[in-house]
Structure formats: C-alpha cells, structure tokens
Image (tube, rainbow, N blue to C red; front, side, top):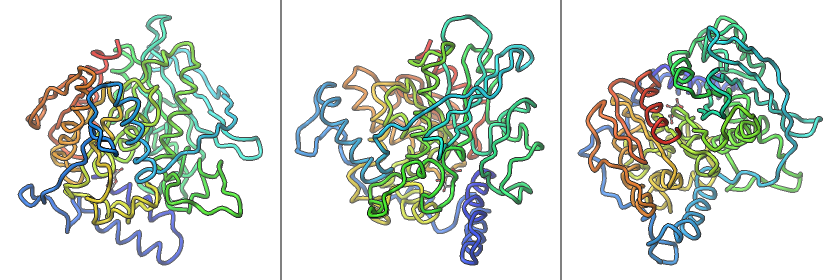
Length: 436
Ligand code: GCU
C-alpha cells in the first residue's frame, strides 16, 4: 500500500497550481485506502467478455505455425500495442556515451564488484544521464547472467551501501522529502524489495536504474526526461500514438541493455528485465519491444500490465488514464469504459515475450491489480507458447504460494502489493532453470 500511496503522491506533489493541489489531495485521500472504493472486487460481478484471439490475424488467417506468428501476427500485435496502448518510441538513434562514475572492488562485504556508470544520451547541448548501479559477483571470469531493474526512489534506496551515488534528478516528495531532492538518510529504504545478496550468492549480476532518471513520473506535457531528447518541431503536434512514460522507461531499459552488452563481465544474451507495479508494466513492454531481453518478469503489474483489461476488476483503463494521463499514448483513452473495443488485451502483451521465459507474479491482497486477471492473461498467452512447443503448466490459478515454473512462470503469494524475498526466490529459481 505504501508504494501505491507514494505513487499517487508523486503525481500531486509536482503540480504547483491550486487545481494540482486539489487533485493531489483527492488522489491521496482515495489511495489511503489500498483498494479505492467504487471499483469491482467481486468475482461474481465480472461481466461477460470476449478476448481477441492472439492466433487469428487481422485478415482472418489462423496462425498455425511459429513462423506465421513471428512473421505476421507478432508484428501486427506489436504495432497495435504501439499505436493504441503505450505509444511509438522513436526509431532514430541518438548519441550515447558511457562514463564510469565509480568503481569498488570490495563491495557487499568483499563478495562483489560495484560499478556506477552514467549512460549519457543526446548531444552535449542536451544530455540525459541515466545512472546505472551494477553489482557483479566475484565468481569467475565467465560473462554473467544479470537482472536489470528500475527502482522507484533512487539507486541509494536499494541497499545501505554508503558508496551508492544519490540521484540529482527529481525524486518524489514523500517520507518528509519536501524539495524533490534525494537524501542521504534514505539509503537502503527500499532494501527489502531487492534480494541483492541472494542474487550475488547465486551468481547473478544486479543492475538497477532510478526510473526518474529516464523520465520523471508526472504529467508535464512530455517536456522533460527522455521525451525532451526528441523535441517536436514547432510545426508538429504530438500524435495520438506518440509514446508515453511507460514507453519512455522501457526505451531507457534498452539503452541500459546496450551498455550491459558491451560490458565484458555480463552475458548480454542472458539479461532478465524485472519490474514491480508500474515498472512491471514497463518490464513487459520492454520485453515486447526489445527481444534481446532473455527473460521478462512482471511483479504485481496490474492494469496496463499483466491484468486483462476487459475484466474491469480493480483498476480500470479509465481510472489509470485519468490518474496517470502521461503513462500511455492518447489513443488508449479511447478505451475508457470501452475496453471491449480495444483490438488487444494484456494476454497478447505476455504473448509478445514468446518463446522467451516470462514470469507473472501476483499478491493475494493486491486486488487493485486483479491477481486473477494477471493469471488469466498468462493462461491465454499460452497458445502462442505452444506454437514453439512450450507450455505454461497451469490450467487453473495455482493455490497461494504454489508457484508454477515452466516457460511461463506464475505465482500468487499471500500478502500485499510489494516485492518480497519470496518473490525473488521464485525469480531466481526460474532464472536458474532458464538462464544457467
Ligand atoms: C497505482 C496505480 C497502479 C500502479 C501502482 C504503482 O496504484 O494505480 O496502476 O501499478 O500505482 O506503480 O505503484
């Protein structure tokens, strides 16, 4: 719940106008309640819906082979998600430079090497710096598999390591922060969400970036962050299919992967992208647009992530587009209260990861994110995996804390909206199975 409150506060805190303050208050009050009122939480009231078939092309052709999926249907679905949901990211390359900001040979009690690099994007007159924190286990000289993640509050919050550099970009005002500046005293604040020691012990590198480095999470008309590197010409207007913040964060993850591919200690072919909540939506989209990611993990991603929108259970398309108008493209607003008109639903997003291993995780009390809808998405993505001879392995939603780990991984654990040690144990087991 805390992160949900933070998420909403984030929006309001950045608006200085009176309406902004009222909006902030409303959103904050609503979300003090983990499950905002006025939304559907009763399974028996879920309306009848029909999902678009991932295996029927727009011209009616049935997809019967992996080849037809790869050559015809996958590109169609990807295009629909770009145009109607997340928005199209720019195709053109921009200059990218790497600056090593810091290195420590004896990090985490001597078990790991720490590297902090600035990924500098754009011309020198307008540069965006994405600051990546990397821990590498000192195991062997072989290139390592890695987890690449985005974090919510700054790299310094993922571990109490005093050498981690603080972000100098905007951070949300919360827990007493009033000036949108990161603070020393927040080191390790979110450490419970990051099983860094376990990753290192099990031979994985861990890479993380503060998502605000890529795009500050508030509606500023796409003037700052990554969008500012691709300014529109004066004669141009933003298109209904132009990228929103989720697409921006996903694009930033691809630039991080560009860097990881160059690092001799990392095996660029074994990088898993993982994210929680809005950043779980982001990891799914990153895995869809960038097939270099070898594994995709979505933790409690909910609406606009793994959950089926047509169920309208918990958070709805209208609600997410209203609370977070900058996350998706404008076209997505056409489906407010009209989910059935959208040519895609979220099972097709999961299918875009095929045949790579994908993991969907839910939490029992996280009804806002619709655990059952997250499971059903995975289930309805399975026919695409079957084209590749791969299976999910579950026909019904597994019982609490009974993970299923085949090519699609799934669990629903007890507890609330969060990332826990239990979640990471599953991701590490799943990664052992697929990346080692
Ligand atoms: C809000 C939002 C969710 C999102 C979450 C988060 O609760 O409604 O869609 O996943 O914030 O990112 O923490």
